[in-house]
Length: 436
Ligand code: GUN
Ligand code: ZN
Image 1 (cartoon, rainbow, N blue to C red):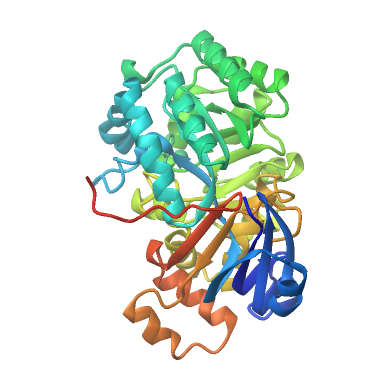
Image 2: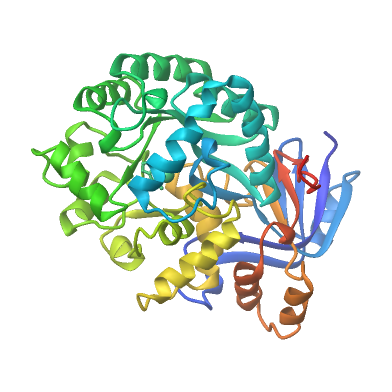
């Protein structure tokens, strides 16, 4: 690939913004540029400075758009692309009525491959360049996920769900099958190119103590892998979990007993946590994953960001497709803002954009590779148009600052606001043609 110089307004975070005017938290170049050499960012700065250094590089002019790091989605479900917008049920009914039957369809590997391709198209259309996914129980669904990501050179994390009870037979494995398939997938994919494996016991209700023991064995054998599961999303779920694990101190205690906490452990939802649970998560460096559109859509509850952060817990954000209603991280942060508003907590727009980029990269311990435009990072980049619709253009006439512009993007934007996306330096936004 020839050297490229992307020209536009360049924004990249350095730290979590403490307020709406925390200008020290980011770098911003009004007439800026990102110099890409191969698949890597070689330099970032003022266009005038970089144009001199960049020699024969092809200049791609994205003015007046914003050039920022590719967005990161830290929790979603590949086999739920056709579950999005399923009516009228809360978590456990939603799983039984819509989700498990849809995931059963992934027994067909052609179907898994077709949906995996559509899933990554949708992610990229929305500016998301790194995704963390639960695949179905079928080993080949994880193969389809990683194969498709590899074809696109994307940095991804994922794993096949392990679930040996309390669903339908078509999506059950056994502790031994879950262990064997996970081990085979780790051998095949973990560390291959930009892929990372996540050991994925779906949640305590669908994993027996024997399967939890198998998960623990995997974590001990492969400490470099991620762990992902669900935690305290819904009150009924918590009640059933505590009935199924009567010796556990609390919901988190189930996972703690089996050694599943740690710096690479991602706990989806984490809504109804006690002080003890938050303290245990903080102490182990475990990550709470806030899934706003899902929490509203399935009626789960309001994530208390302030209490979670104040307790020292690392926080990430995610779409949780298909409980979540949009693959767009902009739509996701719009709902995050509203959830925090209901609790008198303000999420400032700089913090939102930090969370979608560097914040999520830090939560995944991947900030040396993704989440910023720092030289040496992979060139995973999103180009945002704040005037993508007539309504946005009208609103932007009145915007007076970068913070205000970001807030308009978050409140009114979606895939139409993503003008281009680069994966490892390659322009990758799929066409948004009609469905065929
Ligand atoms: N808990 C266990 N499985 C799931 C799932 O697929 N989606 C959500 N939102 N919660 C879960
Ligand atoms: Zn989930």
